[in-house]
Image (cartoon, rainbow, N blue to C red; front, side):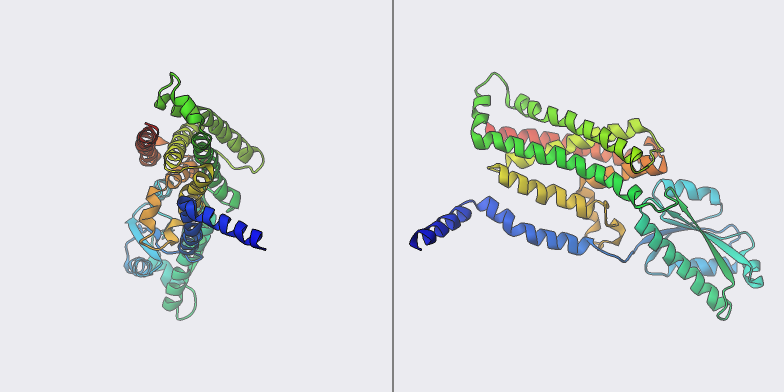
Length: 364
């Protein structure tokens, strides 16, 4: 019994001595509960609505005010032509368009008015809920004007994902998740292993410079991750029928830049951790959990608390998923996605510089 007690004491001291691993083990459950607790929301808020109102009569202005006064909806514009709807939905400037017909007031008076609700279906769950909100506002307003009887009929149309197929929502996010997993996690573990086993010192006394060692370690993962991106897109298209309406070249170029971002994050993590186990936990806690919870991969960012939404901007996957969905489902190009592409390019430059510097400081 005394031998067993000594063994337990020895293991406990071993855990307490490894303070970084202990901190990760203690923080991970707290971080997971906080992240998923705030990110998981079934309700939808902040739905951006554009109203197409060619008449601007008394009734259409009343309905527009009803939309604007609804807490869950946010009026982002009133335009005169339906031609403005498609560019706004493609650019992500609006989630739903409420299209009112010419002579809306006369139609309401005769009880024959019909409005069209057009939704961006790239995020199927969000789109269905957002469309339901707008329809509810229209029906409530219609019932009030008709004394309980609906004087406005509602037609709906879903753009970019008309069947609301869930695979169209998840596959672009899965692409970001897989690339993060292969690039950041494997790089962090590989470099940490070199330090843990002492082979890094052997490399340091070789003619290779530290920067060359780091580049040599990440290049194979860069090629591997790019092959993963191509194969994942092939499976998405052949097996799940997920379309790629836009430029495949732009998508692969963005994937390559995103891989560089993930590799740089892996280098940063490995330079700050003493062993493989801590590096793996750091990558899980610092990269994979935010990719799952805060990137819009599963949970709509618009549904998250207001203070948490700006935090999603520092998650690289957030920007890559917007690019992937835009290219694959909306068919938009660099003219629309230039901001997102620029952001992940800046991420790549800054993180590669930070990763190289932190690793040099560590091994220098």
